[in-house]
Image (cartoon, rainbow, N blue to C red; front, side, top):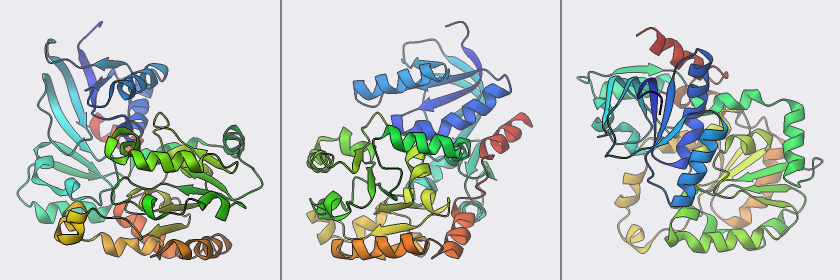
Length: 357
């Protein structure tokens, strides 16, 4: 390595953190700032390789971290994890940025206040953090959700070419099914899901952990069965970025994934399938599931049409695609509150703030 002193070091805990950090890095590079993507190798080896190769191909200066190395130096250290890093890095400012819309309890712990700077999405989030931690010394900024910046880079031609590259029909509406790994609707979805929706394109974008963790290998078997249908495109674990698929889709089906708020922020209809499978311990001790999610999340589900059984899905899809303006006001109000401004310039605002320090 030519130098170990950088303007900004981005800590990469997992492959799926990249879409939130990459737009910021690209903006800093446009301003001639030196960056380093420090890969912590916490994923399986093949995912680490995918992370490294992606960063290399996109000129993001990747490096595999080792505790035996000499210390790194930077002005800004960006961390997208819920825990504060304990690494061999000297920095002037530590910055926290969420890898997902802040509906999980992990986004609201005292641990994150150890950072000097916190970049969050939406004024409601800023107020919540300041009210909960009035004595925290970190500076909190409402900048928006950087991951969504890339949506604005797609032209109509780009979108059509992407649909065709997935061997899908440009003449059909496209449904994006983006379930989380747990608690998930996958187990409750019909094995005939693609056939039931044969008049639509279906993009299946599983959570990273569905592929990564052996506990969920039954989910992958179901995905592979669905993938045999001509109207289905199954995104593999190497296709970690949800943004391209959200950009070309007309409607999203999900469950307890915070991705519903990302999609709703694009003013597109969402169906929230609450027919999910819980482990026995969660069914016996219902308080456990509440700890996984932010207590206020229920009110935000107004962005979506909620269903409670698979049999309700088909009429719900037809209704929402026929009337995409449904819940447009709720989508706007809630997105403004918990996603912040969606204008393709979140990374610019972050870069302006750190340039001012």
